[in-house]
Image (cartoon, rainbow, N blue to C red; front, top):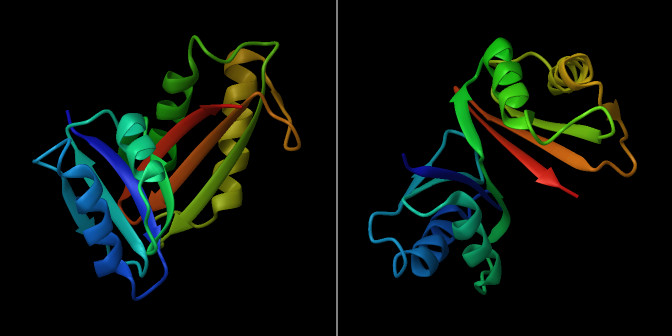
Length: 159
């Protein structure tokens, strides 16, 4: 299965960002592909490399067009129930009753009505499933949910 990474650029700099990503990753993965999305400044990178490894390479590479790099631990169809199920599955074995977490959702497109609502629903599901507590100031784990139209990527970061 190929890894997926979200890359953002300033709107209008997508082509430069695509070239920078390819310049960095092609030597490690000749099959890497960069897809432009319908959203200005948003690229999706498909790679045979583990997403975290590819994002580490990108962060170390000198780039002027790329603003943000987010590796996805899991990628699903944009649907609240599927997103919640994926987050709970991803958190299993990592988050427990002594854990604290925060959820950050960025929504692009209209498949989901509110990113705040997604954050709230995921927070409730993690609290119910694992007994973990929300801590927005200093969480042990940060769950990033990046909604890009029909595709949603989720990353669980240990802080």
